[in-house]
Image (cartoon, rainbow, N blue to C red; front, top):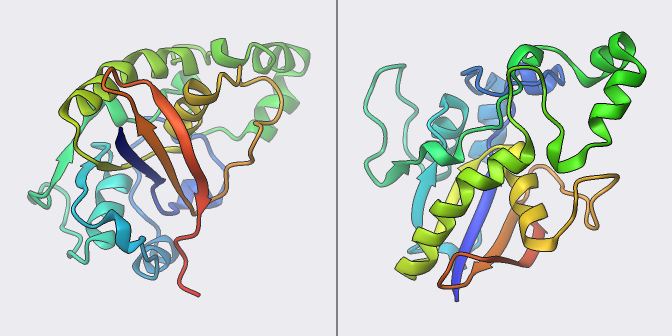
Length: 207
């Protein structure tokens, strides 16, 4: 079986304000970058192939985790980290920049009905978690077939969709295991790319 470790990017100004970021290309906040510099990944992940969402907040997180400097926009990324478009955050479409609290207050029962759709929850002009799973599956199959352990720096929406795919959670109500940030989540992949949970919420903060 092939191992896949996933971790969410560090905090941005929008994360701290609890805004839906989606495809908005935010960078790490000063506090977020400082926190990532203090993260420590398990030694057992040494030798894993590195992948990152193409959005800047993930690229910066990957660079800092690898002890590399964060370049200015437009500068070359760490060549050891492969940018993978299929790891990009779920699109929140017209809702990007809003908070869930604002949307619930504004839309009321309509928002409650949308959230109750679980895997088919879909913002206007955006994606559903089921859409995210559909674009993840081919990449998971590629990694499973390659048989090479990997670490992916990605987004909360992607981690949740992957967890749902691995467990069968329909994304209605609370997940069987609450996903913590920051933390590392470890899955195994079959040769066909089917994910199974190995360990969730592994700590990355130094003791």
